[in-house]
Length: 292
Image (tube, rainbow, N blue to C red; front, side, top):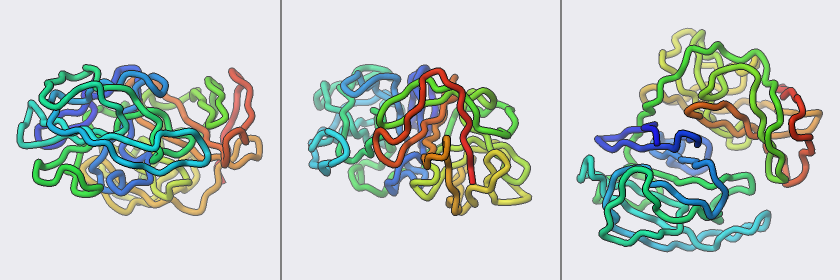
């Protein structure tokens, strides 16, 4: 497990072979810099590793929507962990069927339960833990989390000139490609002469995050492969929130969305069809993604 985010004494961890995202979600906390999703490298029903050191203080089952596009759970779970690093803060964890009980102490990476396919997901959403750091007086609301800071350093790779790679996984819900060039940590873009890494859903969520080590001074326009895709509207430290412009993404003439994450040691892009099964590609084939 690697430390990837921090807030008020609470360090959040991600598996070394997993990925994480602050902005790849339509829910408000992900536009307010107060939530992170941790994606272990496993299928639904796999083990959910604890992202923090904490004591279980609350577990609650909650009703969630029934989705017509996939078979998901009608119930989700909220798990509250009192941080052992800062007992004045609570970590809220969602999307895990708990195997732990109130009063138990868990270390980083210890089994919290099983990852479920929640009715709050879209059909392309992979198993993950949603994590927020909260004050004990307000641990449950959809809003009210404390702002997070990313801990992973971004390498010095140049902005990508093209999105080209090899198909590594084909599912009805999405296709994964491994990029030929770029950073090991994600898809690189140019913002005012500074390099950043994209984090989010383009263009389907309407917003996208950008992580940069240096503040852009010449422009607030986010350029992917030389195309303007978004403009920055807000920031918190090294994390920036940008509003997507009127863009279209195509593979072989088929409209797709780009689902983008941060990786400790790999760089992949998820291609999302408009509906399951609409994107038919061959595994190990070479493809190029067009942005217009």
